[in-house]
Structures are given as structure tokens and as C-alpha cells.
Image 1 (cartoon, rainbow, N blue to C red):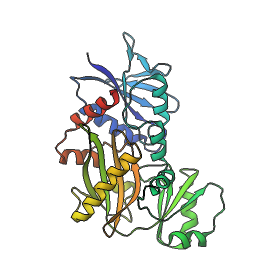
Image 2: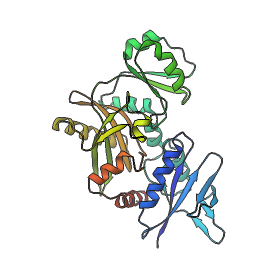
Image 3: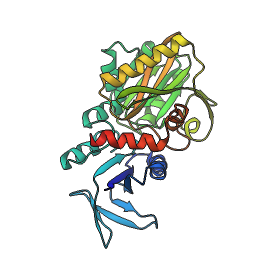
Image 4: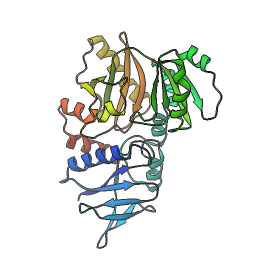
Length: 324
């Protein structure tokens, strides 16, 4: 008998529309001979199932079910495709733990950890993972521009701590841009991260446990037409994404080993995508996405295709791991 799979999309962040695109790609490619798939949209004020006819049916949050008039559907598996809160920060994962409903991806703690850039970096430093020099600031906290610049140098990056798709990320080239960039980043989050500029090739590495083996799906070189790999570079075609990346064999070996080490040490489940910048032969870790984009423009699906793995098989493996 086919299991009822809720493909959960939307969320509370600025990545709402990107999540819808990712969720719809999953809905289009899920093996419907094995699973009964339902699109579930989550907003702060309403959770609903969206039928193929565009009709909205309110979700009962008490048991994660939906009454569609002539049938009561209990969702048996949650396939989480929300980028940002509450999909990547552990909130939904905790909810499904309480209801004892299997879900895809990381558990509550790992999700919250990887979503918090500065906490994730702090943990990985203890495992000798190279990272950029950084300064952490909380909203309303006093900071001295000269001390910040003395530590991280110029240019540098100011980043909202818990945000994706490069929302709330600003490159600072001169001292006069620092205060305004910090102010702008605080519009996205109450915590920010200021990091030194790393001059080198940027790569994105897709990792997933597949058929019981932790596998690097691909290493993609990111070349932005803009000043850095920002939102427009990611989603509006203002970049080149080269798979496989044009890097040396030593660089390939180093970043492959590091990406798998990070996957293991953080206890990642399901798919993930990590970003690195090479300084010489050494990859420096930037961040990890525990629910990477699965839109038609996204990197991970392209890497899977290059590895000879169809989206349908990838989705089936994610669901299999959730059930197990």
C-alpha cells in the first residue's frame, strides 16, 4: 500500500518562494507508483494541503492530518523542503518527533546547529576544519570599527547569522561601508557574523548517504558575475556553475575528505551542500545547507544528474532513510 507523503514547503523566511519551487520539483519527480504525494504549504498563520485543482484544505496540527471532504488523510512521512525557518532550524523536526512521524533530513539539534552559522563554525574549528577569521555581534551590542577591521581585515563579509540564499549578506570593501552593512544585516537577524575575505576558488559540495555509503555527489565551481555569489548569482543566472569544478586533484581530494568529515562529525542525515573557498590547496569551510535548494536552477539536482542518479531515485532514498 502506498504511503502518504507530505511534501512540506513554504516557511517563515524570505526563502518562501524558493521553497515552493523546490517542493514542486520534488512533487513532480517523486515516484507516484510507490507514494501518494501531497503538497503541504506552511505559513505562520495557516498550514494547508494544496490540491492539484488549487483548492486549499487546512491541516490539523494536532495529528498532522487533513480532511478533504470525503476522506481523512493522515500523513505518514514528512518530506521537508523548507529553506530557512521552520524547516532548517529544528522546529519542524521537533514537531514531528513529538508526533512520531518519520521525516527526511537531520534531527532537531543538528538542524539548529547547521542553521546557526557561527555555532556551526565554532564546533567545526574543534575538529580542525579551516575557517575564515570572524567576529560575532548581537543586535544593540557595541562594536569598534577599527577593532573589527584589525581582526578580519578588508575586504570582509557581513552576514546575517541565520539566513539562507545569501539574504542579509554584504561585502565590505572600505571602512566607511562597515556600519551600514552591519545595520542592514541586522534587518535580517539579531545575530551577525563578520568574516575575513578569502581569495580563491569557491566550490559547492553535495553530500548524501546513498545506498549506505556517504557519497560526494559533485563538486561545483561557483563563478559569480557579481561581486560575490549573491542571490542574483544563485537564482537569476548571474553566475557560472561548473561541474565538475576545475580544480587540482589534490584540491579535489582535500575538499572531498573534508566534506565527508563534516557530514560525519555533525551527524548530518539525508542530503546536504557545503560551501568552501580554496586558499592554495586547502579548502576553508563557509557554511552548510541541511536542506539545499532543489529547484531547476539549484546545484544539488545537477550534481546528482552528473553522478547518474535520477531525482526520482534520490527522493525514494530520502524517504527510505526517513522510514528507517
